[in-house]
Image (cartoon, rainbow, N blue to C red; front, side, top):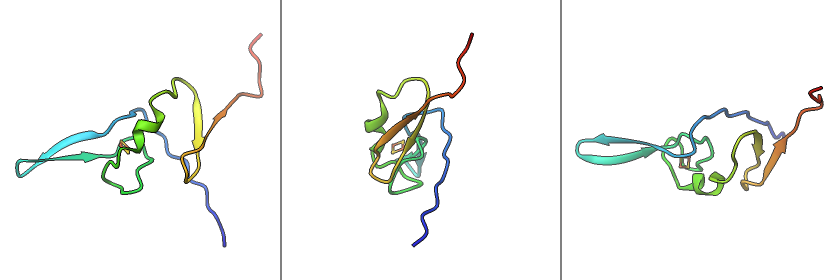
Length: 72
Ligand code: FES
């Protein structure tokens, strides 16, 4: 089995709300939904992430990326 990584960049941690034929639909903008393109509320798990670069696995375990370079 080959596991491919995927980089998802996002600048929102909440869905886009759109209305279709009078029905509200929520489109995932965090990139983590298990039911794309629809929001499945997984974004609730990343509300505390703050600034930085993070990687998430399929179980939404988070790892923060840190720089190898230090500012002087
Ligand atoms: S915005 Fe991605 S799961 Fe809700």
